Image (cartoon, rainbow, N blue to C red):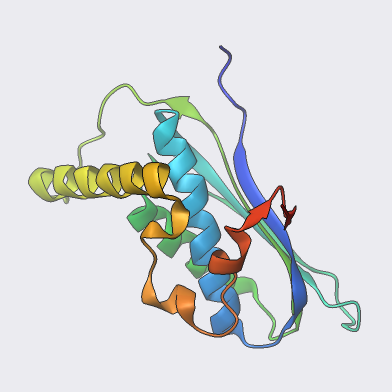
Length: 168
């Protein structure tokens, strides 16, 4: 089976989001879903891409940026990269659509060791993420969520009940 060229998730929000903190939560939820797919397919990403479309009432269209990173499939590593990009490029405009994607896909063959990382902690983090993935595979993505996914404006809880973005 050929390897996917990229993994991504996008959504058109049901309303304009004016609070950047709420948009950051939505990005976190989306990145965690994409990272879970990377892990399930045993691949790493080395290029991340974030785009946000602004409200139709905005004078600007939005932004779209990508960044090369060390190859990873870890939510703990990917979420901060995406959020760093969001805070760098967002312009305090109302956001209506968000897309995250991961490219530079390579099969996971071995773990890249760094002199600055604690190997044991890295292994523990990988085991934790795999355990979370197993629980979510079995009981649904909402079986384990961050508390901030429950606050007003987060979309993860609502989206999990949708089939292909629509009410089933």
